[in-house]
Image (cartoon, rainbow, N blue to C red; front, side, top):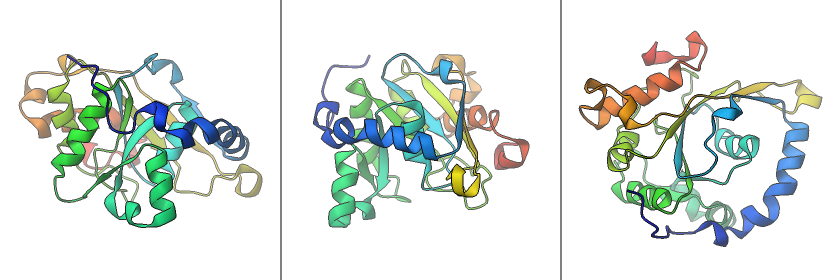
Length: 219
């Protein structure tokens, strides 16, 4: 079961989020062309995991802003080495991950986020897809789901975020589609046979929300 042990950087300390998010959200939603579908599928409160495809650097802030949620993400460790960028990234509650190394320390921090009742944003592909089509998911989300099977996973589809989205200038339009939450108990025994199988099951839920041409290896 989820404990009440507080994670690193609890929400109360995310002063940048608390101070700046409301005006930033108002401005971004006025300027950016993005349509949210399936908002009613979001659980009322955490903990839960938002699992999404990843096609552009804008995806994490657009998910948080469009859904009006304080979401905790992993960010590549290099971002923390720059004084200003690192400060901003930390202040918004992101935590570092060494990509390509199976970073268990980052996964343990992610578990602590869930144990603190917060919302975790997770991109199972591990990095952006240059083509926009789904890549094979890495087993990290299966690792998290196996250790907290009671935590809902909410599939997210990001569509069209590669294009410029200032609607008044470019007329850009993107879609954020929220699927129905599910838990490990909703998967078949074969889908739960190991962490990679769990991840593939999660990725198929994401693929079902995407246009056929974006489903990639999960078509």
